Length: 206
Image 1: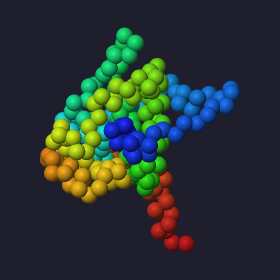
Image 2: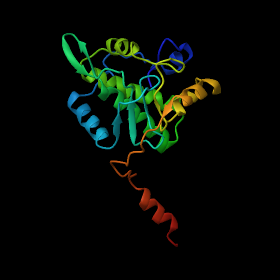
Image 3: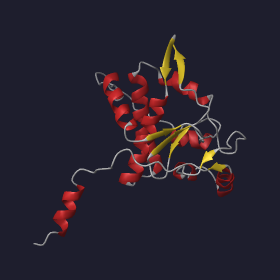
Image 4: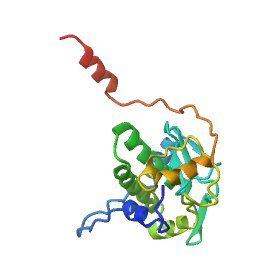
């Protein structure tokens, strides 16, 4: 989900929190491109990517978390300083991190979004791209709830991110334009380290 100045309340809430860097400190987003490539591959191995629907604010995820959606009209790349840059990977990082924090840790959407946004920024800058150039490109393709182009919304889309910023009537209109979307089988079995062991320890007799 990407903020837009077409929805000022949302833009204010979703804008990244900027910190003043102290002299001598490494930027918090500094990360190697190779490591980011491995992270994106790991996410792609665990989640389906679906690009056949209209998605408010560019990207989202299914209720079960097994599918990441990117808007069908969103280009897969843009030109930055005479080189072609693939952009799906940045949105994938954001949506995967955000959904994981909400679904596994029960975090509030706005808190999860801030963490996911910093992860997205790290991925963008690891490619040697400025956030300003990337964000400006994204703004041209954002669809907001109420747009006439928002006619093919997947019925499995998780609506959690939209409820804080839209009233019941707006959400009702969006639901009216929903299309059937298959529930994909998970590519990877979720495993939380130590969870099974903890259950055994709790249930074991003294």
